[in-house]
Length: 178
Image (tube, rainbow, N blue to C red; front, side, top):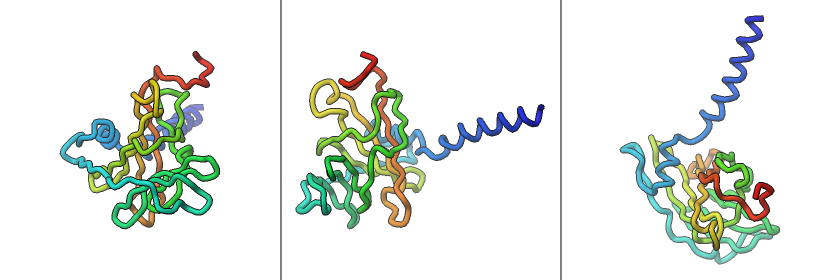
């Protein structure tokens, strides 16, 4: 019986610890939120040059991008669905690991060029920070959603997306809790 109890505890701990190890360090998120280095191990720089692309990807429209170190970063819409372009790769933001403290706010909310894109260096690892208003108008325009992208600047690694919305008092119009 003791063996079963021990294995059960180990299994629960493994399920709790594994996601914690996979997410970016707290210092990276804090740097993204504050737009200043959290500590001396952090550095943040703006990816500028955003604009409407001359030509969108095939089957897509409204591509806004910036070129950084010869690679494209931005957003676009394909078949009425919102996507990121991260290091020349089209990614679905809805697939981001959701760390929102508000269960009703989920990744994938479309945003426009008001979003800010930053490169964060922390302990020799590069992250992409995307800060965007939750909405273009109304109360949502005063609250930011954050995406942290790990491996965003590594050519041979798959980018990992993490989503954060940090206000539990905002609810979408479609909310069933209002």
